[in-house]
Amino acid sequence: EAAAQRGVSRNEIEDMAVDSFGLQEGCRDYDFDGYTCRLAVTGVGKSELRWFKPDGSPQKTVPAFVKTDHADKLKKLKATQKNLNTTLTAQRDRLDQMMRSEHRVPREHAEQYYWQHGLMSCLTRPLIWQFFRDENDTQGKSALWLDGTW
Image (cartoon, rainbow, N blue to C red; front, side, top):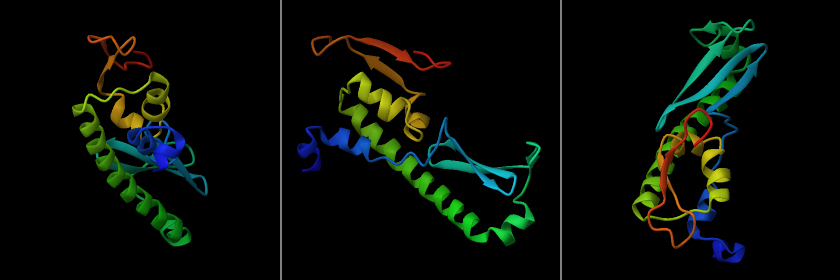
């Protein structure tokens, strides 16, 4: 019903509803008094929290002061990570169903909701895509995203 009201397909409205989690290039940084925690997608349904000292060097574990002084923020971050992992798996499954249905998506839509989207780009950029000139094009051209270009 919401898709019909907006004049878009069900798949398109589902694309619009996917949370980006504030990710850019599969990562998002959180500041903890000069220390940085990077939430990074590492695979389908997988992410990790990487810690960095104020000088940018890696920190192997959660700094002790974060556990005490920022316990609530850390708890929220871990909940976000868990939600991100679940969403990655669900979106992978949704993409798989769409690909099997030979669903065609306008390039502008794919650009915004797949290739430049904080979360979806982690799933869609590694795929081989079929590009068609128009509705009558039955062969299209295959391409994959490499170093920022098709």
